[in-house]
Image 1 (cartoon, helix red, strand yellow):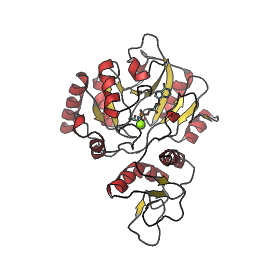
Image 2 (cartoon, helix red, strand yellow; image 1 turned 180 degrees about the vertical axis):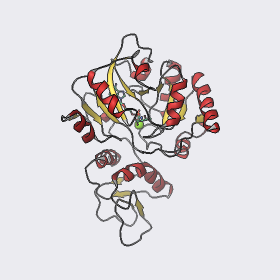
Image 3 (cartoon, rainbow, N blue to C red; image 1 turned 120 degrees about the vertical axis):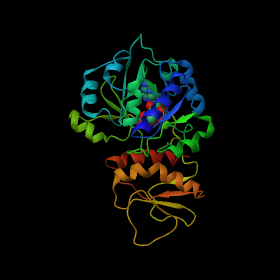
Image 4 (spheres, rainbow, N blue to C red; image 1 turned 45 degrees about the horizontal axis):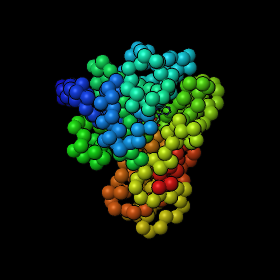
Length: 310
Ligand code: TXA
Ligand code: MG
C-alpha cells in the first residue's frame, strides 16, 4: 500500500532524528525511539512520566540483529523459532559491547527483547539500522493504548507522530519470560503460559511480584483506569459500570461487554478499550464479573487485580 509506505517513511524520519513515534503492535501500541541513542530513549521516559529505574523492551526485526547486543541461549532459540514474531518478550543477558542505551536497560546486565508481529511495525524495523526501545504508549501506570485515538488521549500534541496500524489484534501486553536461568514468568501476557509449558514440556515458575524489583510487579498500581474497580462482582451497585463476559437476558445501560460468549481472547482484546469507554461515559466506579482463571483469563485477571489496587 502506497499510503502505508509513505507513513513508514515519515516515522523513520522522526526516529532517525531521535524523536519518539507511537507504533502499532499486535499486543498494544508502543512509544518507540532509537534504542542505541541516550537522547532518544530519555525522551520516552519524559513523555511517559516513567521512573528511570523501570527498563524498556527492545524491539528487533529478527534474531540476526539481536546477536550484536545479547547473549543467545538454547532455550531462547527454541522459543524464538516457535513463538516469534509474536506476543512474547525474553529477558536475556546483555553483551558487554552492546550499543543499547544504558537508560533503556537501567544499567542492568540483562535486557528485555521482543519481535513484534504487526506488519507495519515489522516493515519499519526492517528499514532501520537500530532496534527500537518501546514501552506501552500510555502515561506511566495508566491503561495501555490499543488504537490511535487512545495514544492521542494519552499524549495529545506532545507526541509528534503516531503510525496508524488499526486496532491491536491481541489488545493486551506481551508475556515476559526470564531466560537467564531456568525460564520463569515475569508477566502474564498475550501468549498463554500453558502453550509455552506444553512446548518446553515443563512447568514454568511464576515470579510476577518479585520483591527483588527485577520484574514488572515493581509497581503494584499498574494498568489503572483512574477510578476504583472491584473484581469478581456478582451484583453491581447502580452507580457502577458493570463489565461482563457472558450475555445477560436483559439490558441495562451500565452493562459493558468484553465478550458476549465467554471468549477470553475477545475479552482480552476489548479490555482496555472498554475500560477507557467507561471512563469517557463518566462512571466513577467499575465492577467486573468473575473471569475464569484459564488461558488469557489469567492475563486479564492479572491486569484487573492490579487495577483494583488503585
Ligand atoms: O506488548 C508489549 O510488551 C508492549 C509492546 C509495546 O511491545 N510493551 C510493553 O512495555 O508492555 P512496558 O514498558 O509497558 O512493559 C515492559 C515491562 C516493564 O514492566 C519492565 O519492568 C519489564 O518489562 N522489563 C524490562 N526490562 C526488564 C529486565 N531486564 N528484567 C525484567 N523486567 C524487565
Ligand atoms: Mg506498560
